[in-house]
Image (cartoon, rainbow, N blue to C red; front, side):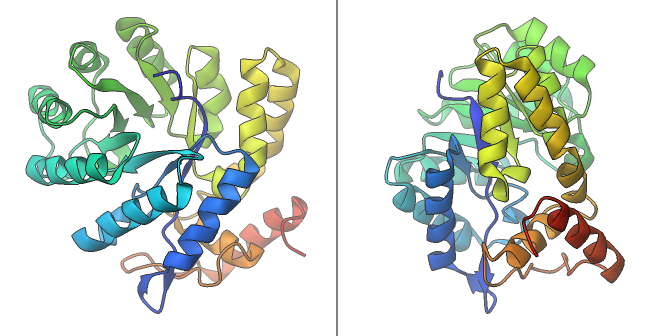
Length: 294
């Protein structure tokens, strides 16, 4: 899948008065189309999918696809710890017109490697949609081992992985076992450039919510062999990348977007709550240093 590259945004879900703010979501899609984002990824961790109802989840995916109008690809977050629910969400995404699906490893259940293999195979074989597996053991409680990816790469529709293990060694092993036909995407903004150096093709980015053009430029610079330019952007982004994870994602990025005026209401859904005053002050300091707020 040669479009599975570049700067893809892990899109936030804007709320207003406790409901999904559809006009705000539409404005964010326009913002990313204008700023050069490669793909939109709604209903992932950053989109607070864990607190969306099934109806809201489907609504956000549908509205994102409709707002994109084919101008930018949409990779819908459709994962669940319940295989049947993941199947339903992925089928819905295909029917709605998504270009791909991002499917997280089942959380809380702590399945074995065989259980993980069977879960992803069941989802992939039920649809005609590229499946990107999301590996983030810090949230799911289970790591998908490179050897399991070596089995999954042979399954129809399994196209790649969003890797957020934090381990370049593991990422290298996955790439080595699965080959060039298997897409390797960064799930950690700080590791995007190092990951690309071992064969990755881009990032599903939190930082791109607020600096989409910069993240896109870094990825494009590396792709075009302008390594010094890519390194400069990488180092320039490090402080803001760290600030985006000063508290649990997406608390800082949504707060930053409110401060920047990208969304009017930066509210989160419990159990996520507003930033502490100390961390809010640190976030504002970083945003000022990037001239993102006054």
